[in-house]
Image (cartoon, rainbow, N blue to C red; front, side, top):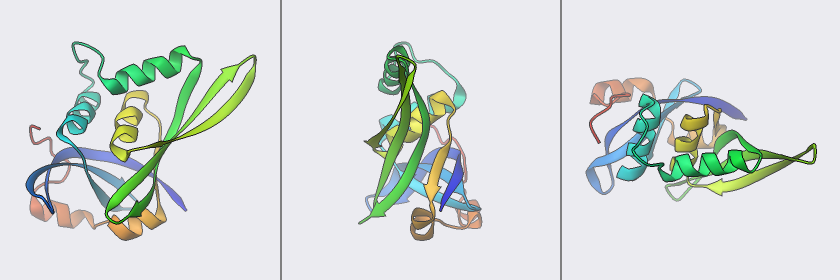
Length: 153
């Protein structure tokens, strides 16, 4: 089963590599799914959340603009698998040519998919399998002080 998710925030967490690792927190099915991302990805997401334009288009902005110019649209993004600690995602898109709709699915890193979703305001979907494996109760993040806070990445 699939569930709508919301981006609760981007902050700094503790991963296997140690502290100071950027993390995006997704809320789905009343649980929090933390996904560790690169600093660049975290910054891109934070700019999209804040609605702040960058001086020049970032990669995600460029991709959205190109898809639109080619007659396409991003419909939704999915975080649909987790294997050996690695999350997997997809971008569902559509294109209209000659009055015909063509549906497309692209493999994507979840961080890229989420950064794009934040720009086009499309749904972020997380599967039960991912939530079952990676979901945590929200209280766990409240206790650690990292729930949804912008921690200055």
